[in-house]
Amino acid sequence: MRADSTTIVALVTAPASGAVGILRVSGPAALEVGRRLAPGVPASPTPRHVYLASFVDAAGAVLDEGLFLYFQAPRSFTGEDVVELQAHGSPRLLRLLLSRALEDERVRPALPGEFTRRAFLNGRIDLTRAEAVADLVAADSEAAVRAAAAGLSGALAERIRALETPLRELHADLEGVLNFPDEAEGADAEAGPRVTALRSAAEALRAEVGRGRLVRQGARVALYGPVNAGKSTLFNRLVGEARALVDDEPGTTRDALEARVEWDGLGVTLYDTAGLREAPGRVEALGIARTRELLAAVDLAVLVLPPGTSRDEASSWTREAGATPVLSVTGKCDVMLEAREEHGSAALPSPAPPRVSGLTGEGVEALRTSVLTWLWGGGTPSAVALVSERHADALRRTAEALGRAEAASRVSTLEVLSGEVGLALEALGEVSGTSVSEALLDTLFQRFCIGK
Ligand SMILES: Nc1nc2c(c(=O)[nH]1)N(C=O)[C@@H](CNc1ccc(C(=O)N[C@@H](CCC(=O)O)C(=O)O)cc1)CN2
Image (tube, rainbow, N blue to C red; front, side, top):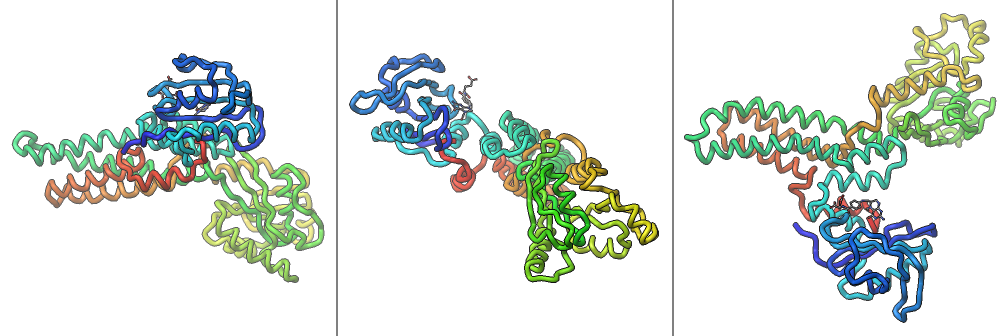
C-alpha cells in the first residue's frame, strides 16, 4: 500500500482567528506551489531553514508577510516534500492562500488525517504512533496528554514489537520445519511453551484497554442516594464551586448535574443525581429514570447516605446501582452527632461507611483518594499504554489464534499449528499496521481532523 502521488494542501491550524495560521503542502509539487505563493524564496531553499517571505496574490500584490519552511523528502512529517506557510491567523487570509495553492492542478485539499496517513504509508511512523497523534489532539486531561505523548514516542509500538518479533520468528521456525523436515528436528516440540508465553503477553496487553479508556475518555462517577443526604453540598465541595442548587427542601436536586474535574491528572466527570425513590412530582419521576440510566453507565457510584441509615436500607440502596461498583459514605457528618442522639448508634450500618461533610470538608479528601484508588488502583495514569478498543479487538483475535495454536501443539499437525500462528501474526499486524486493509485505514483516519 502506497501514498498516492498527488500534492495535498490544508490549513493545519484551527479555522478561527489566532495569532498565527499555518498552511501545509505535502507532495512532489509542494516546493513549486509554495514558491508561487512566496516568490521571494530561493528556488532551492535550504531545508528546515526559516525564511521570512511575502505571500502574494496572482497579481503579485502582497497579502501577508510570514514564515516559509521547506522540509525535503524524506526528512519531513509525511516523508514527502513539505512546505509550510506560517501566516497571520486571519481565517479569510488563510482561505485566500489555500485557494491560491489549489489553483495548481496537481494539488487537492487534504482529507482528514491524510498527512498522518501519508506519514504511516511512507514508513515514518507505525500505526500506533499515527493513532497517538489523534489521541494527543483529542487529549483533555493531563494524563491523556502524557499517555498520548508516550504513544507518539513509540511506547505502545515497542510493546507490540516485543510480541510481533518473537511471533514472526516462531512462525518462520515452524514454516522452516514444514519445508525442511530433516534439518530442523525438535523445533516443533519447543513451540508449545513459546505459544503459551506469547498468548499471555497478548492477553496482558489487551487487559490494559480499560485503563486506556479511562485515561482517554475520563472516568464517570455519580453521587446518588436518598433525598437530602447531602449529595449536592458534597458535589459542590468535590467540584470546588457552587454548581448545584443547594436547598434544605427534600428533592431540590431535580436534574443530574455534571461537572468535569481533573484529579491527579485523570479526567473525571462527576454527576449529582436526583433522589432515586421518593417521587412526589412528575419532574422528580423523570429525574429518577435518568438516574437509573446514569447509574448503569458510570464507572463508579458513590452512595451518599444520611446519618442513621440502617444496614438494610443501605444495602437496598447499594442494589439500585446494579452492576456498577458502589462506594458508600455517610453524608452530612456535621449533623452526625445530632442523628446519633435521635436514633442511637445501633441504627448505623456496621461498619459505618466513612463520614464526609460537604459543608465542613471533613472526609472529602479521603473520599477523593478512595475514588481514585477504586478507579485506578496504583500507578500513575500517565504511564498507561493507550490500548484502544480497536487494539483490544485485534489483540483478542491474536490471543484466540494462539489459544488454538496451543491446543494444536498438543494434538494436531504442524500445518495446523503454523496456520494458527500465522493468523495470530496477521491479527497483531492490524495494531502495528504491518497488515492493514485500505478500508481499515479509511475508518481509522476518518476520526482525524483536516490538516492533521
Ligand atoms: N509547524 C509545525 N508544527 C508542528 C508540526 C508540523 O508539521 N508543523 N507537527 C506535525 O504535524 C508536529 C511535529 N511533528 C513532526 C514530526 C516529524 C517531523 C520531521 O521532519 N521528521 C523527519 C525528520 C526527523 C529529524 O530530522 O529529526 C523524519 O521523521 O524523517 C516534523 C514534524 C507538531 N508541530
